[in-house]
Image 1 (cartoon, helix red, strand yellow):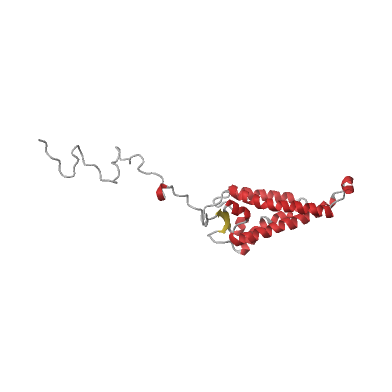
Image 2 (cartoon, helix red, strand yellow):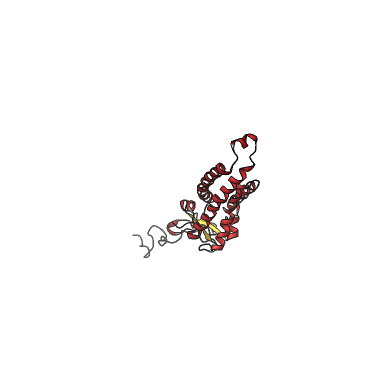
Length: 216
């Protein structure tokens, strides 16, 4: 007859570890593979990277901002084209002037179209962002403008933001300045991609705002 093992001991060897305990250490004192891993959130989902200082929600992707601006700009670009055509028929050079090479009077139609069309865009940008931080384009892309630290931008800060972009586009109707405005717009767009860690354009920096993903 064999002796009975003490109570609680495995009859075939050493006692098994209690349920839920860590596996025994490997030779050499190193923890077993997989003992440590990336920090996990609820239900095993990896935790998100920490937000930049002052940013209250995940930042919008740069392409989301570009698409939102394209949608808004497309609307007023069409308005600018229509106004330009109307003013050109009213104040532009006649066919005889064009045949003679006299096109100096084309300034007025383009200037009036830019003042009215993009002036209206600037007002639209200010009013829409002042309501809930979203224009039509931003609603489509589900992003919004907020103040650093959270909350809606102050009216004065939002005015600064709108005057820079799209307010600068009012100058498109002025010869020689339209090229500088195009360069300025390109720089703002690139800055949204390269600025770290908040991805602020120049208009965001002046207004103290960031563009984040809107609550779903």
